[in-house]
Image 1 (tube, rainbow, N blue to C red):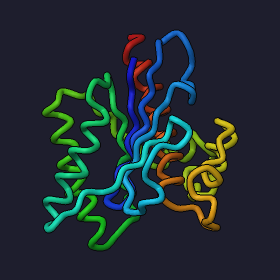
Image 2 (image 1 turned 90 degrees about the horizontal axis):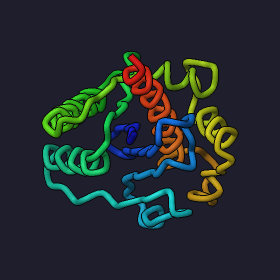
Image 3 (image 1 turned 90 degrees about the vertical axis):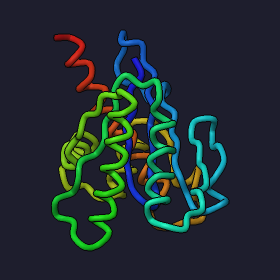
Image 4 (image 1 turned 45 degrees about the vertical axis):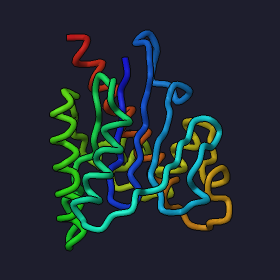
Length: 190
């Protein structure tokens, strides 16, 4: 069983890929993480598990959307199931429409590739991770550290005081992947 969770955005997309055998519970040690960044020092591989790549240059928003969605699809090819975080309905502004356009392109490309997609509510992801459906980035990263023993901020962004990309994106992708794995197992048990 190979399941992925995608925390999709224009500035810090992240994919968590879980390769499980179906005989055990979802396990962090069987996850690999991939993210895009525009910070050179955050690109590269950290602890053999976290893979950062630089964004491609773009001259037009459509080129940007195409590049990001191609990158994400490439990471999930071969997956049995993909979880994608749904929209936060309280969001507003121009960026919300850009995210929706970009996400629509990703969904189309996943459909074209024959990959089953589960749209998971952001509140479910946060509640499953922290017990609260409105958890902030700090709480999500703290939950990740508690569940995995991994201090992402110290590992990837040790000079930063605040939580940001890719640390928060990795935590979100992990919990999206975990929720998608649970959904996929329910489908398979029917």
